Length: 105
Image (cartoon, rainbow, N blue to C red; front, side, top):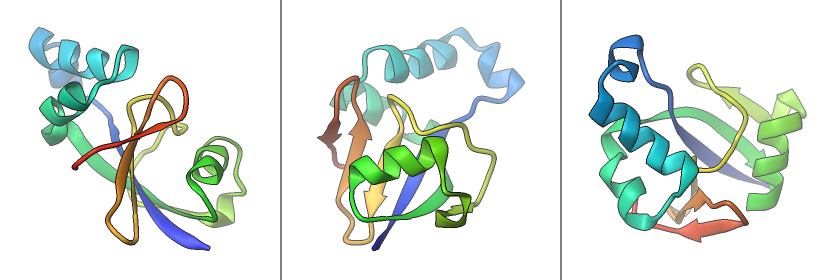
């Protein structure tokens, strides 16, 4: 097993009320691209470390557990489109509508 760090965007009320920030966030979850994820980089926060054998297993554990494989660092929603996952080796991907896409994060 390897450790994967999960980064998510969780907007504050003030950020949610800011049209530009809200649109940036919506771009990452509705139509993620390398450029959109990079543009929203400052909105991402480290929310968890998940122990898993693969990215697919990170996705599964981040949605249905087991909870003992998740070290929660901040409030976290289920792993979903637009989230960024970084392996122990530093390789980063974001969750795409289908599968994962490598990105410099």
